[in-house]
Length: 385
Image (tube, rainbow, N blue to C red; front, side, top):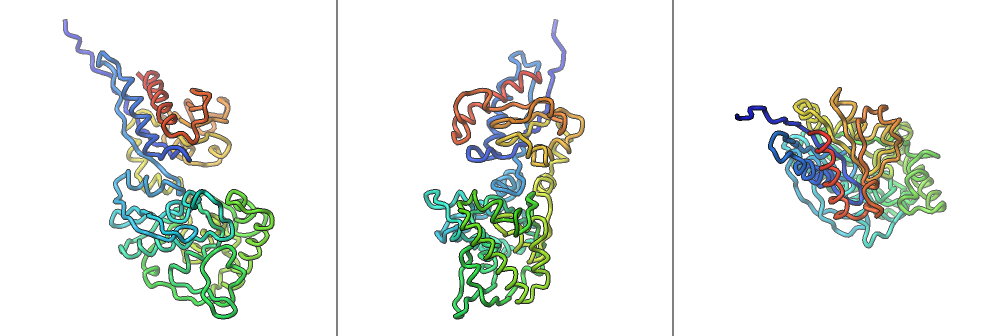
């Protein structure tokens, strides 16, 4: 007698962020999918369907996530954080361009990993924006995570036509150290900026200056000593004052704006250019059409390097869970510091952590991370079938 029972199909949407320092969002999704598919029942009565949607929240990996969703990668050479040329990429779909700090002037691009808290510049990011403008986009998404510099966006502005001169009339190159040397600013805003919508995608809420400002909060992770932090704080204050003198009427007000301190003050310079600030996580979920993609799925699998208190504060997995409705939400992380009792706060059904599968540190071991993710994917698949 033939068995006419229809095979059970479980449709999963795998929508993770990157595992920073280890795997890109696309690599995380691929490894999980491989594990899930290996769990399909040998009788053929159970089937897992995987749809992959690598995500980003405005930090590093934003260009990769856009490309994975259908944007075209456009390559360009820019000045890296120390001036050495690096190969950067932007994403473009004919209307929207995505430009990120991490692959133009990010910490990961510092030669030999040597931190340069006073000398690093955001100029490369400005050069990438300039390249994006040459494609005549309707809008440019400015993804600000991962900056190596604390120059207030001075470097970016030099690439976009603004001139900063010292007391002897010599042209200054953007850097945290150069901020205090600014004597005169010449405004030569590019006409293309008037016709292009600028969107800052970031979930950083710090102002430019003060105890919660860019130097004090983010300077140490860029190698800034207490003395360096004082120099950067003084320099950024001087920068704001000189911008006000040069005719930026809202220069002082914008310095206190939430998000002005993101990416070493690049958020401030972007606001000066008229950029609209949005939540990075939510904006990229919209840009990559998450809502439509999740509607055809039974289960959503998300994740990032660490599930912790910051996740609860609105990082990408929380945004994914909030939009996923009543369907089960499974999170995968390198480590989870969130007790099971708190999973319901962001509607998580289950959390899997690589740290629970090994005694080794997988944070900087891509091969081990991918292997463990395949094991976790298999376990998730077995629980769903």
